[in-house]
Length: 243
Image (cartoon, rainbow, N blue to C red; front, side, top):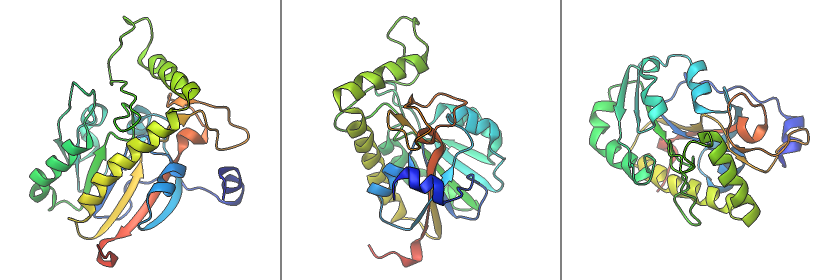
């Protein structure tokens, strides 16, 4: 079913991060339509995000009780009050992100500290830029090579538009999502209970999902386009998995 038909036939619920789960895996800037093409485990439904950028989502998100959050996301680390405990997974300043292998390493190191909490959250930075796989699009977070002549949002938008014109933006985003899902698969093999995979917001790749939406690039705040607002909510019961 295409996205325009989906918007007409379904009433999409807003995401609620306080629902019951044992593990919540948040993939930053993960679109629903790309996720369902790459991930085949569990029951997947669309949800509407709380906003179109991470800061907007974090400002609106309710405090999650009995929770621990493992992340290397700088914005999430600045909203520690939303969780009972936050564990820093680290940040690679050469790549300009917290790569998924940092998250897997930190998960293995801090698993026993996370386990006692009712809600255990892993907040990945992927598939958010920089796009690390093949083809790459290495737009570092917080870096401005234009000598501050452009805002960070303007810089990413310009880079995305150029990649779109070259025909590599969708491929780079899809590859980056596939990369992080490989690490998510490794983590799911090591946990028990109910696992939910979701996102904070979508991503603008110049591909409108509704007829009324215009193309958008990256994820500026305060927007309503479904490229930015439609995210997955995937529920997995690990007791039913056969690896």
